[in-house]
Length: 233
Image (cartoon, rainbow, N blue to C red; front, side):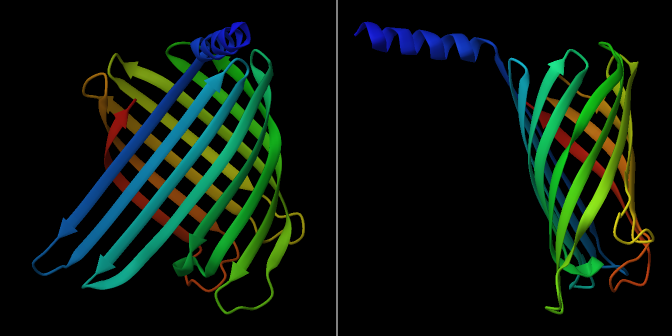
């Protein structure tokens, strides 16, 4: 009985230092009449923090139709572990799975390892940088040989509280290819979040994705503008 009590006490002590956060968003765009357009975007970002560790699970799904014909569909699922060995510096390890047949690939498996560092962090603003190594296995739509190789990963994110209920965020991610120098990726997203109350927020964001050597698509870049309703828990 005593051992059971000790175990329960340990679990309660661990839980008291843990914190769970979830940010879920959904956006829908439907246009009719001369133009028949439908787009749906769902995102979920979750983090469980205990002591110096953070466990993250993120998912996103985007679907679009134009004149009742599917014109866009992509999704991603990611797991990541962060460990802060210093107050502003840490290590991260993650696995990200992506799918986007309209960009020319069936699946893309990414394994990440790197470091994070906050150059500045306060209640109203922050500046975060990440640098790491990524190993990618990309499965092609035509069942040809998988594309495999190492990439670098450089990521910078800045946040600023503009007003009490308005926050701005900007991030940029650069992925150089160590095997083929011309086959690099660049992702950029500025966003603005307006808090409606303690739980709900509105977010407007513009995601720009650049692929210097696209597989089959005609354009080297994709962009997605969203106006979303966010629920924070």
